[in-house]
Length: 76
Image (cartoon, rainbow, N blue to C red; front, top):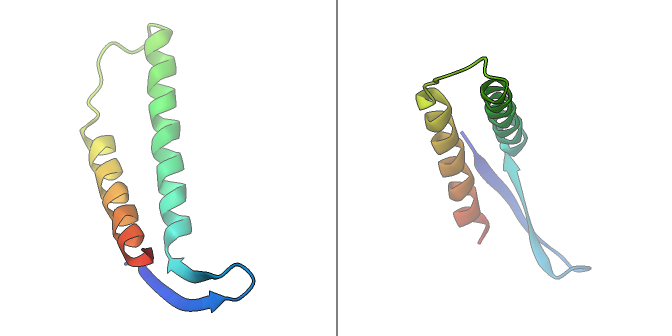
């Protein structure tokens, strides 16, 4: 569960500061998805992989992207 907290204005930058709990974990998940896609691309380029089902990676990406969009709505 991602939750935005804070909301204090920083007088030096005149911007609202919001802390999004869980954003670090989502960044790790996106990095892992990217690494998996890179490995798939390398294997396909080497001719060691001829077909692949990306259903799980696509679903993970959709979930993470939706969560990031939810955070963006709160931060606005």
